[in-house]
Length: 115
Length: 117
Image 1: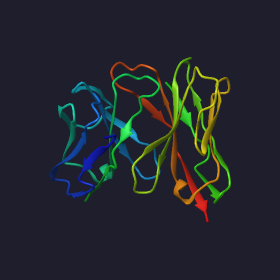
Image 2: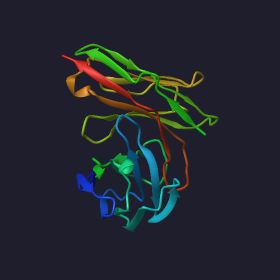
Image 3: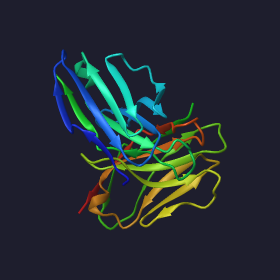
Image 4: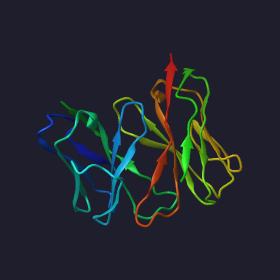
């Protein structure tokens, strides 16, 4: 199974709502990532978890709160978002060792619209 | 810090023809990995091809091949016999060998490829 799944596929929320994005993988990867991608732009790294511990937070506003409850799951909790946070949110996973044949596997993304 | 540059925001190719996408990068590292990722419209990003910097031989994967010029810091992707399914956004990406328990990837700005029937 070389699949990363994300739910929901689409999410529309108001600026006062609280919602969560979910990501799951069963490849035994111990590194998981959240990216934000605007239209026609490359993915921008937000957070990295390694062995269920937060390793990188790329100065992301606190209205985004990541959580890694176990080695297969990654959540992104959203609260008080702004319209400019509307984007495609991608989850990825990889083996923790950066040898040449270890790549990041991406999920299909959650299309988030903030009204 | 590493940077990855794709100078062609958009390109088009006739079906069955060959197209080359350009990528240059800047790094002070001697060992690293380079990738091309494909992101079709409304579909997930997948790896197309990879290249280790210590290997002089250019990588190939079926209709996809790269021209890796380490001294020039250039890593272009050639797509032969282009098919309609090749239409996508293509991202060049750079990765260092070891980031301590995870992989930190630097993406280029992307090239949108249109395939004309």
